[in-house]
Image (cartoon, rainbow, N blue to C red; front, side):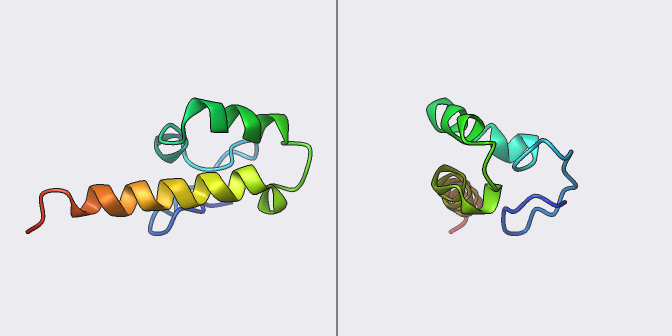
Length: 68
């Protein structure tokens, strides 16, 4: 499985919802919610989808920093 964040594509261990660099961008309270819901399919978990959207936005914003 690959990291679901746009443009990443790193291979994931089976237990990880996204690569470690992107996972650590997710606020800790949201990471805890995701782990608590881990018994469900990841792609259907609202917290997981929210985390992916949040990290996608953070990555896009950080890519713009320093560009003029």
